[in-house]
Image 1 (cartoon, rainbow, N blue to C red):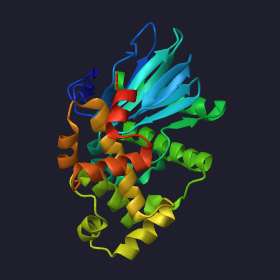
Image 2 (spheres, rainbow, N blue to C red):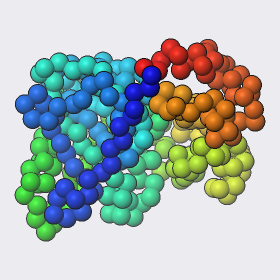
Image 3 (spheres, rainbow, N blue to C red):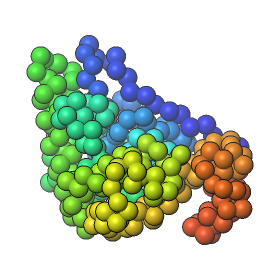
Length: 289
């Protein structure tokens, strides 16, 4: 039996004005996380664990957490808090694309950060000094939200922007990633387009046409910024979409084959088994609750 995924939308009416960002503190005393319930956001989130231990499943991959861990919650990813200790606490920093896109006049803003790439690990472990810096920034954000002023939106954006840049630098260093992504317009536009179109477009030509670039230009950009070819990036992103449908929907295999553009069921099964070692039905039976 499938456990229904709870979808959270951003509450634009929480404050007197539309800020499109928030910072919430979770603890045993105040607001608690809910375990055993798959959920997803239609906005971006960063969870900074302040104390205790926890286990979270993100896209069916489990991570053990403790103080100093930062979890990057990308929009529309399915995750589930599996277990938390009684002394568990942390800050959840959330924001919508519009919050940063409008201010920076940059519709590629969130795609510039390596930690928001779906192909990268969603966790970062910080040294005490850096972790304390992020916690203090969350406290400043929370305080400003409680006592809003006419210029608060500028101050809040500056705090958020500083944190994102700092986290991205640390993340790149921790995972030894390319620094090229931040300014590579072809890679950035491709990643944005991929997220918007993956369910209907899976051919390389689909994206070269959308981006008005050649196949070799796109391959060169992705090899430089991600160390992968265009075909592999599309394949891996498509696999994520297939797994979501298998685990978090009641769609039958034929529906998934049709909706994701596979030529037929046998081709779909070969694709999935080659990459996971299981048939789609086996995968659903093993991993779905």
